Length: 122
Image (cartoon, rainbow, N blue to C red; front, side, top):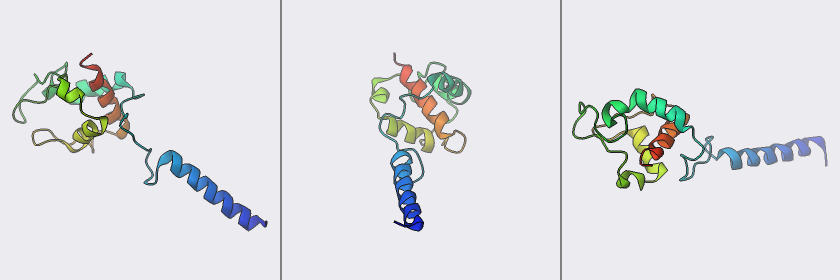
């Protein structure tokens, strides 16, 4: 086997290895366990800074109602039963009475907020 062929094969192997770790779209592969391993301590800080104004300091939906009707009570079983993917989508895309946070929060920050939200009902 000549050197060019070895380099080509190694390139393919490395590319396939990278895709298996990072995913075909260049982002870490995501599962429905996106809140696991995220830093809920930094999530609490981010929540206090960006979310508590509407959702309240304990996430009970008792903050300011400046954007419309009752902000979501994040401690309700109906919220806790939602998948991580669904909650991350809400954080990223917003709702009619909630702004989108995808341009303000990084993926890591969004996951940290989600990890913190998961601790609220406990």
